[in-house]
Length: 143
Image 1 (tube, rainbow, N blue to C red):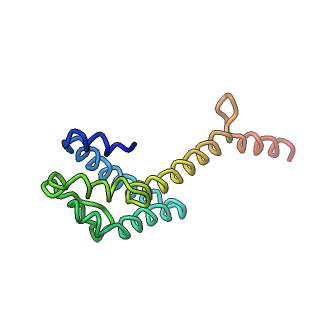
Image 2: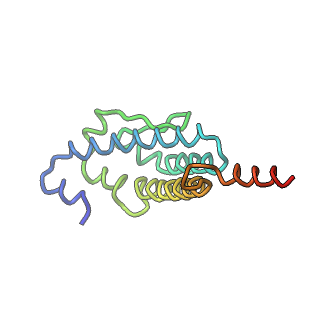
Image 3: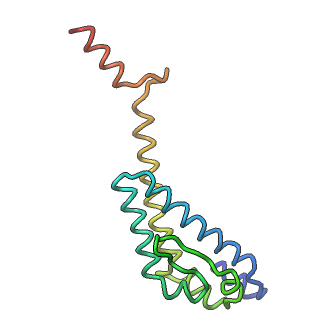
């Protein structure tokens, strides 16, 4: 069962609305960080997230979330707070929804970050020296 089942029983969507606001903040923070990094892959991921928002623009608007020209999302708290559970679930809970697509892309971002961290970590010895510096010193000594 989905989380929406829990809210359907109580009829209170206030906690769900809080989580959706956090999702929008995370979306904006993530796209900003990816763009600021400037690497080709991270810019691709930022654009992929924005594409998902563009694809979901009409559905997002139904719950008070607007895709701004700069690619960020903004929330109309009144519209979001008054959205019914069925509409919220259509946007955030169904297969192929905004949430599912952004979660997929975020997973790729996390995998890439982890691989990058592993790559950087493997460039150092146990004592904290860079392997490349050790190799350079060896070649300098040998002439």
